[in-house]
Image 1: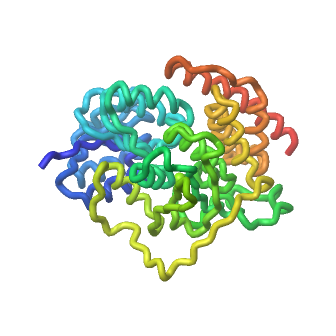
Image 2 (image 1 turned 180 degrees about the vertical axis):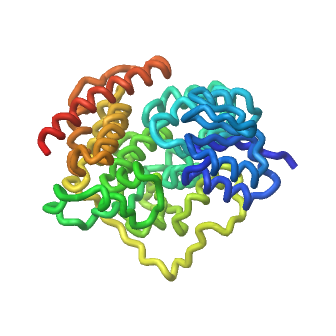
Image 3 (image 1 turned 90 degrees about the horizontal axis):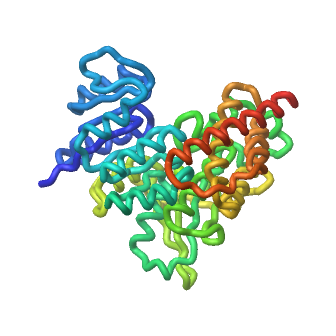
Length: 380
Ligand code: MG
């Protein structure tokens, strides 16, 4: 039996913890050879003890503990460069997840990718890097995992479009007149998924779905006409594809991130699991079109794809800045979309040549979006 060696990045976050659970289920054919976290050293040490993980990295600070192999700003790069592995699970949140994806692919390791920013910021360069080193990109985002599983069973020229489902977040039925007064606390109430704070806010604005539309565009070579978003509050249908003769095919389970994580790890096979069991007789599946007035960020994402160049990257960076300002109570909920829109009005029509060019553009957008935040702070 061949053993797959796994590195888990973002080990103490929600994707990371679910990954440990999945590997416990998969048993001895998987071995965790490395794990990295940002700051939660105690939790990392607990996991390392339970799963006998030899190489550990902490990225936020220097740690003086013999058990931690690498610490400080270069810790994740060192972990990836100096550990022999077969697959890396990237569960790092936000744009800091990009370079760890790059290093993993450079090493030829398959990439189980939960960090959507990797694809949103650098899709074409990431895909050509993977093609060069022979590494696979295996989406872990639940919608893209569903689409990936559905597409590989169909002939490409028989696909008409994909339908990405969205929970609609906590505000899908909130009267528009109440939007200006929505608070941080309101935005953190997610109906179905238990996730980090940034992604929960992104779910309330549907900015998360915007990022996922961009991710699907890059991952599956789809233009904007081939991507539809439907609100599906039960979150059981993870996404659908529509074939040319008019049929829909769906991936359906109880929402549980452990299924997409496991499917990435066992690719190209499926393995038994106790996760996500659903009695269809207990479900009442419904779908609705997202209201563009309620979710302007979703429309901006489609626009960013049409503009091309660095606009998708700008969409992501501006949203990161705006959500951070909202979390710090500097701007209102409705200002998040306004900051992104204002940032996208600038000229971001560049073609990327390498990853350092991407990082440099990301920080230029970041600075621009911070200027836009100041405008909205003055309004409040
Ligand atoms: Mg998702």
